[in-house]
Amino acid sequence: MALTTCKECSAEISDSAATCPRCGVASPGGSCSILLSRAKNLAGRLHPCEVYLDGVLRAELVPGGSIGIETGAGAFHLDVVMTLPTMTKSLTDTLNLLPKQEARYEIRYGSWGGYKLVRVA
Image (cartoon, rainbow, N blue to C red; front, side, top):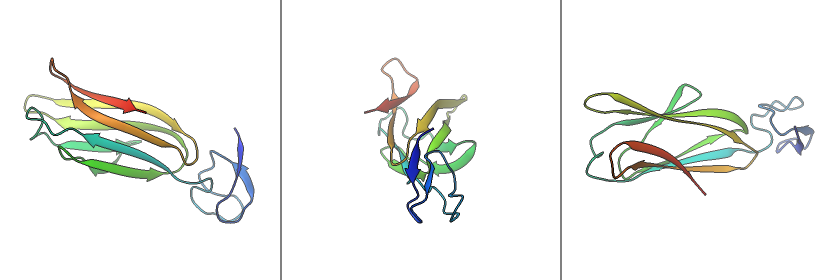
């Protein structure tokens, strides 16, 4: 656990604090972002795609689209759920974000079939 400065009151706080113990501001160490993009391809053009963060629906991602989710620092479970004609496919990852960090993901359709959630630099 590292220490950082609260963006609101300048108190010294843990970099993983959800709220500042002094002033109560949310994400006191600064916000983080999770960016997701989805290729527009023939195979996946009709399949709905829902994005969950820690079990809470945060967005719907359309083919060829991209979204950004703002959050505080900490550990998260990312779950992308696609409803296909014959089944529901879940793509997951666990990530630990530091203050002001950005995580980028792409949802890709493989040449042999099947969707993949790929973290990119």
